[in-house]
Length: 500
Ligand SMILES: Cc1cc2nc3c(=O)[nH]c(=O)nc-3n(C[C@H](O)[C@H](O)[C@H](O)COP(=O)(O)OP(=O)(O)OC[C@H]3O[C@@H](n4cnc5c(N)ncnc54)[C@H](O)[C@@H]3O)c2cc1C
Picture: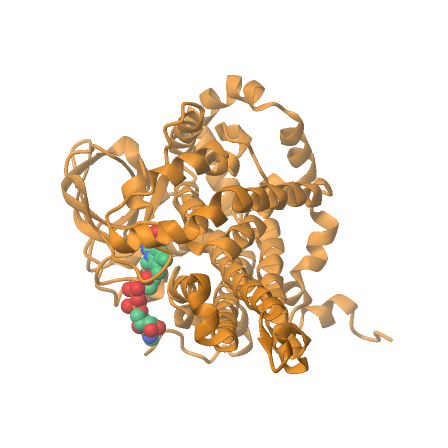
C-alpha cells in the first residue's frame, strides 16, 4: 500500500496530522488523572457561579456604571478566599499546583455567568504568565510566594500584565509589528538598575494588583530587539496609578492606566533583558517573540474560553426565555423555528469549546508548562504535599544555576515548530471562539427582542461584555494573521507577512 513511501512521510505533508489533530497525541501522553482534575475544577467554578457570581453580577455592573472608579475589593477578597489567585501556581513555587489544563474550562464556566468577574480572576494568570515567560526563577519564586501568602492572610496579592501603550496595542504583541509601533516605554540603564519612563493603558486589574509585570524597551528605535521585562511593586518611587478606563463591558474588572515617571527599578527586579539573553540559543528579537508566544499561547485560549462562555451565557438566556414566553398560543420552545435557532446557538458554543480544548491539548504538549505534564513529574508533584516542597524549593529556586537550567530546558530546547503550533492554535481559538460568542449574543438579542432584554438586562450585558473580547489580547485581525504566520505560512512560503 505504501510502496516507495512511508506513512509518516504522508502524514508529514501539509496539513500535517500533528498540526491539525493535536488531541490525538495528547490522549496518549497526558496523565489520566487530569480528567478528574478538570471535573473537580469545573464543579468548583459552578459552585462559585451559583453562590457568588450570579447573585452579584448585575449589581456590580450597575455599580461600576455609576462610579467607574469603584474598585471591587469585596469580590477580589472573595475570589482570593476561594483560592483562585494561587490555584494554578505550580507547587514548586508554593501554589496549589492545579494543572493548567483545568484553567480554561473554569474560565468558560465563570464567563457563562459574567465575563467581568471571569476576567477579574482569569487575568491574574496573564500577569503570572508574563512573570513565567522570562524563566527568572528567583523572581518567579519570590512573587508567587507573596501571592500564596496573600491568600493565607486574606490580603490579596494580585499580579497584572503591562503590555499595551497609548500608541501600541496590537503592534506590541508581534515583534514584526513592533518596529512600526509607536511604543514609548523606555528603560535606560543606570547604576544598579534602570530608569523607566512611559505609560501603559488598559491594564486589567491594575489598581487592585500588588505586582505589575512590565514590558519596556531599551532602545525605542529598535524595540523589537531590545525588549526588557520588569517586576514592579506598588510603592516603587516614580510608579503611580493613572485613570481608570470607562469600559463599555466587563465592568467588574477594572482597567487601569499605569504611569512611570523616572521610575527606578533595581537590577534584582529585571526578569529578562538583552543582557540576560546573551548565551541563549535565539537572537534577542527571536527571544522577544518567544516570550510573547509563551504568554499568548497560554492566555489566548483563555480568551477563546471566554468566547465560549459568553456564547453559552447568551444561549442559556435565550433558552430560558423560550421556555417561559408564549407566542401564537404556544411556548416559544415548542416552535420548530425556535428549536432550530437554539440548536444553532448550542452548536456555536460547542464549536467555540472545541477550539479551546484542542488548544489546551496543544499547550499541554508544547507550551511553556509542558514539562509539568510529563507523567512521572506530574504524579510526583501531585503526591507531594506543598509543605514538603516548601522546605527545599525556595533555596533551590534562588540559585542562578536553576534559572539557567530552566531557560535551557524550556526556552532553548523548545522547537520552533512546537512554538508555532501553540501560537497558531491559540490565535485560532481566540478569534474563532470570540466571533462565535458575538454571534450568539446577536442571535439571542434578536430572538428575544426588546421584551427579553428588558427582563433583567442580562442579555444586553452579555453582548457588551462580549464585544471587548474581540480586541482583548490583540485584535481578531492580528490573530488571523498570526494563524497564517504560524500554521498556513509553510504552505505559502512566498507570502510576505505584516507588509501592509
Ligand atoms: C477587556 C480588555 C482587557 C485588557 N487587558 C489588558 C491587560 O491586562 N494588559 C495589557 O497590556 N493590555 C490589555 N488590554 C489591551 C489589549 O491587549 C489591546 O486592546 C489590544 O492589543 C488591541 O490594541 P488596541 O486596543 O490598541 O487596538 P489597535 O491595535 O489600535 O486596533 C484597532 C483597530 O486597528 C486595526 N489594526 C491594528 N493594527 C493593524 C495592522 N497592523 N494592520 C491592520 N489593521 C490593524 C485592528 O484590526 C482594529 O480594528 C485589554 C483589552 C481589553 C479589551
